[in-house]
Picture (cartoon, rainbow, N blue to C red):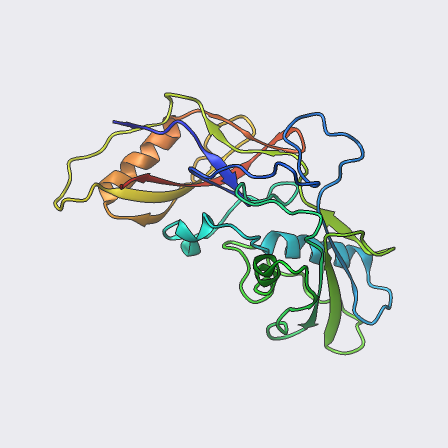
Length: 274
């Protein structure tokens, strides 16, 4: 019987064993209530030629950009099967990886041409922040995006032509009139109630390595796993993966928080192995 006492958050997913970051960031706080003068990191959108852009469309585009973005995270690349993720909960505000937080210097501006048909042109960072890892993390937003990302909003009817060039701002003061989406300024991870998440390891079918499974599951604001939300992303043993699924449905959790209120959130965790 294996007990899993703790979960920590990364991006809009919770990954196990991630060191918390955020101390010293002007865009994150670890206590509630949040002071009125502390605001979340902004992502804003405007038309590339300076003309007026429909505000609802621009806001939807900024929101999709923020949720498709994968900010720098060393932990993310070590999660087996993460690219197979089919669905995830989108919390009210975009969230940061727990092992990375933006600093005041993380200000950049990018341009991209959106097309009515076909894929958008690649995003081009025209004013980089100077942090190479940060700037490079912006480039795939329109090409691939984070696993289980929302789609980009369709171009509005009535545009002059079949394409639209937009400017996207990351950090800094949003330009006047540009719709803006802000990341959560306060976020807490899903945490398992100690002793409640237990997985019985079945008899091994052979081999010297212990079984392992990486799964995704969703936890609601009441701290319960949402039935039907468990996805096995990677597993070396079907029986062990089934035992993990059973253990999750019996477990109890402290729900995630976003801006000081409980929210539903997707969790990715690796069990077993070593």
